[in-house]
Length: 161
Image 1 (cartoon, rainbow, N blue to C red):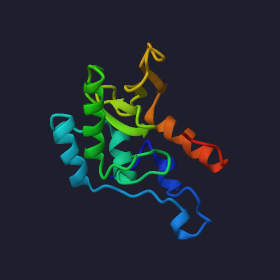
Image 2: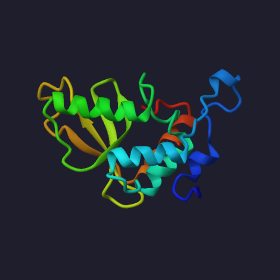
Image 3: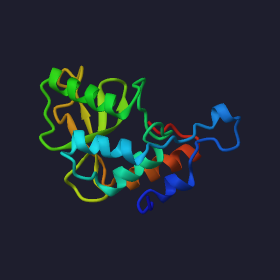
């Protein structure tokens, strides 16, 4: 796959390039077949936006700029987020794909109907007790800019979450 939007991730495949191997936190790719399986299940067989496909292709199994939590796969993360949204009567109302989990109460996701480099949204679905009346909010204008920003913050030693 030709990388168009996520060249910065492709050029920065690990968090700590000078550390011992176990502390480098290398990205781990997903095969095209695995991506197509996810597209079948979560986007009615249509291709995901290009930037999302690139993310999955480069780092669909592990990515140091996102927390895939203790879940074993992207498919498991999608199921977890959808179950959590349903449990707390939350509805995004559009086709989406979760890319990051935060603290077990929030997911970051892209909507699958926003073009090749979609915006990133956050959705707080658990334990808000009214603290987040706007439980669903935009985090970044594009997936590529969100990833770029997190890589740069990581390089500076800042908390990227």
